[in-house]
Image (cartoon, rainbow, N blue to C red; front, side):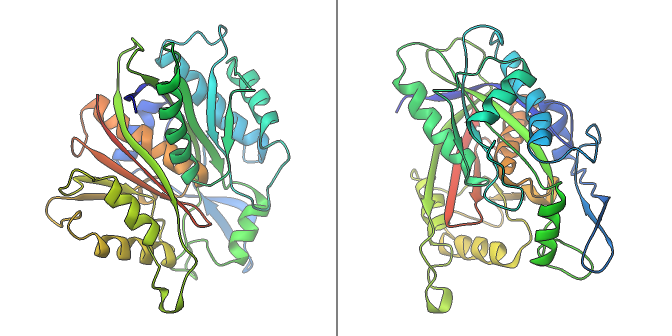
Length: 338
């Protein structure tokens, strides 16, 4: 497959109004949950990480459009794309099925996003994925094949948007005892955000910010007695991602504090102890830095890593990002400096 490069970035959310701010605030670990007006089952105020520039009453599809529009605009501008010119192809990760499900999550979302961002989107060619954080890995895998198959130098925009700031979603998470609190010690901190990367092939002449070395997905087998298959899909992915041998020097995983996610990640590292070294591998848990942003987590991790290469604070010259969905889907991608 031909090489694929990131030639533009955009991000928006609680940690900044653009990709640069998001990368630097993530680096500084400026995680700041704030209480909401919504009450949990004990009568306490539920908290989350959310953008201060958006009204708390803005929820659902309208909130996602408000998050995604500035990030998409920035990514196109960063790559030198004429937003009012030839329509761009967008591969977009959207929330998984949950209580805030909406029929507009799909084709209608592209129409609303394009209008809000001032970007002409090629809706027939664009695709959306509802596989949680893994959706970004699927989108990158598809984008690499897309730019390799094109005879011209047209790039594709890969991104994601999600938000847990929704009354029905927070109530659902509280009922399932998944929100981190004084009563739930293995829950997660809900967050939100949007991020986009413009991915182009080797023919494209725009300055290259990073190289997508690989992107792949796998499906976790059904559990067996004794949890024998725990971590099997992630184990396969991290090994395939390091086909050349040697340890992974920098790993950004989306472990969010939930017990089953932590266990799966520990098993993955144990099964691949030759690829993870206590002294040579730097591990960062993106959800410890920004909260769990659902489907947007992988895209925000991508802009963080690419921003690190761009701004000069990368932890190593190669980053592995691993992602998990609520279901059996698992994914990863590898990013290197261009």
